[in-house]
Length: 488
Image (cartoon, rainbow, N blue to C red; front, top):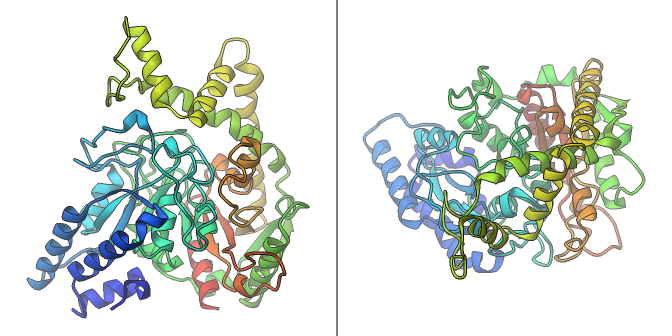
């Protein structure tokens, strides 16, 4: 048994047939982490002993003939902004370097109930702010497909863990594309569920009206299994919605899907799209046509305003959410007490030392747009534009059932290429941000034949992802079409 050959479905079948044990597979993944992660840097904290104990517990239950959950024994990686009792939770920041979770996030509790195994916590851009995982306070994560390039961000550690076969699945958070963009860059599947479909309780918040937890996986089928494991109402999250997500989510509704129409928004297929990305999108569209679905050009007219709208609303919420981190209430920032004469100085020095440059930039932007005299000019206007973007999707979904777009205008870029140009970095998420503003579900799926794209350019075989966007709470549509595409 090689862990590289496993999917969650294959693992679950093999485990129940006793072809291998959960402990054997967990040891296999821990061995790959020990061998490869010094080079890739996907993990911030590896949970060797706890993972093996969880795996042995699953094996013992199976040996007794007890029923186990669909995710029993599945070795998973968890982004370091989700709380696990007794495990470090740094959010990639020096501000929380010594912070340890004192309770389980709801998604963690659900996964524990399923019997999942946690291999460790993964690297991320500080407080989920970034598109390359270059903004972590601890280290950079490399793209397992090409070590000279970034894995995307901010959930780059989770995407790299799955792409590098150092986890069978993983979880990240997506505020403006932080699951879908790294999934596209690393050649794996990443799902951002509908806002409210998954509880955010226990997630260290970046921008509360945009954040959503979702899975990374090797296949769409695996992503569906992971999503079903965490979806559902939670009394601890007032924004979670009480809608059933049962086995329908994991089934392929082939006959229903073949009668659907996929929309291509003209605002997403624009000049500036990298030629290899355009080539890959054409191949995907041809494949979906071949499956029998109708294709129709549509318009999402306010797309051009999504980026500026996002970079007003998001930092406004960042400045509010991060006000609580002062180096006193959650964890100390090492070495700041010296030469401090009063409490105000201690707060200032803690925040100056604990936060990185990108976090400070967004706090200042957010504080400005919320300040007296500028609130109506910026924040209030941005919320009106957000409503118009959501209306665009509502109108489009009167004519089509799903929307297809690129995930990113480019393939994964090299380290340092955009780190000194924040605006260029922000453009990496230009195709993913509108789904967060509208709250609709979206999935990033690797283009199967991108490796065969004939191009004289360097790294023509780098991963390219395409995005399917669905109606609110219709994850089963994009998951079904995704599985049909993979099987075509």
